[in-house]
Image (cartoon, rainbow, N blue to C red):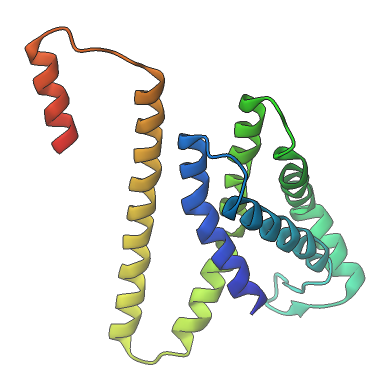
Length: 183
């Protein structure tokens, strides 16, 4: 259940972060609740990571606290603690550029936690014996990745267009702009 909730938060961040960065959405109402849920979850997850077992080189699961804590400290602790600090102090930044940079750093969590999503999907696929279902799952994942990339690119292009107010000077530029919009 913990991993599934983490994946839901990751997917929410994957969609919400480009949106909030492109449209400069203030942290109020729904966004405040979402930010608090995210902060609390990832803070608790940081602590739980000290106690989470890992797979050794000889494919055994190591669960001894001293070894799991050392493994986490050497591997992902600095990245995770930096992200949690950004979560807690990032929204308090009054300078818009710094607040945007703090939000942008949260995308690093997507990369860091993508392994968790991959493992969860592999477990789900292992319980399904129908190969066609495996194919549907893999194709759905690829489609979702493509949709997410399109979402991110649209948000980037919106920011570029919003910050660069260029008025077409001739009919050819207007025609080109219409072509770009409809393609």
